[in-house]
Length: 258
Image 1 (tube, rainbow, N blue to C red):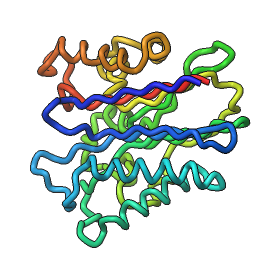
Image 2 (cartoon, one colour):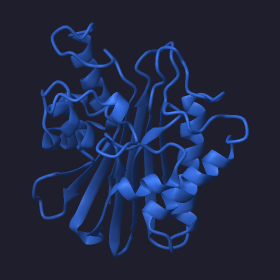
Image 3 (cartoon, rainbow, N blue to C red):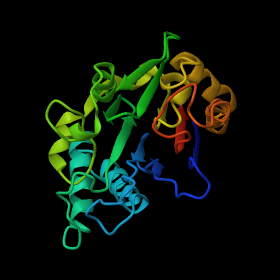
Image 4 (cartoon, rainbow, N blue to C red):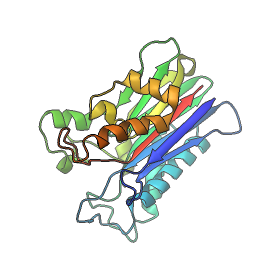
């Protein structure tokens, strides 16, 4: 098995808000991965919370990874619910978790054994599945944000609201909104998880497609993919040619080959 990961902050003077983790339990054939993309606070810094986004993603990601490994009797959505509740309990006495910008994150998780590969995607990170039969790369997406933007809707006020989009914050009930599914393990030869910062060559710049992205990952690894994104950002450092929320974004990529 090959496992490679890379993560890089959007700016060297600002902490990376992403989280990535992989676990390969000693007992039995299988494993799991978790990738989170922390939501950057508003410019005024008001979140109702005394903790940073990296504090939140480290705890949520760690709790989800532990739950997915230790509680194989629970579906991934249930594991995420456990992790959200545990993280909320860690700071609800000192923070206002009802604040709409309380620390939160997008989520990609996958768990596999000899029989099946289960997945969960919440918000705008992506899971890529490379089929063993050589067919096209499959992108598992939660496209709510993209659909809202295509309609010309301002998305920020619709965060974690009906008719909007959802992230992992303080309410375990959000797990019902995640995109989940299961694939026979033998039908997948490799998979990758990308935060939206690592998927920009496809989703923002339109310079690549998912097949090309996966090909670059397999050939040269996650660091090469992030370098590809940085080159595109460097060519338009102010976002003049390709408008985007941040000229540079945290980027995390994880590749698993069976």
